[in-house]
Image (cartoon, rainbow, N blue to C red; front, top):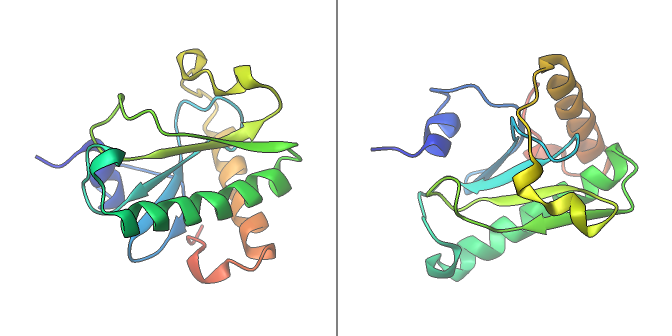
Length: 142
């Protein structure tokens, strides 16, 4: 049975994509820690990052780095935090979020965003920043 993330990648469920390439995608989470909180997900279903092919994991980290640069630009964040927890969905995913203090990475504090316009705006801002940073070939269409 496909994972929740595979269903989003396959467009069976909605997602606010900011990055798409042949190996990985990035889309905003519906329960952001801060505006711009994005998940980087390989297209291949891999449950645990420790068992992922090293090249796949390296590619996902490169995407996360680009997304982090976009987050810093789009949201004027002093840092972009990165977290691989792997407990919520059995499909490798990397959280990338604006970061001002360590508590900003407390995933137990995440709340489902009720304002859909806020999520749409965050996705647009991040796509614009990624394009401005030279990643236009992988920026997902609006």
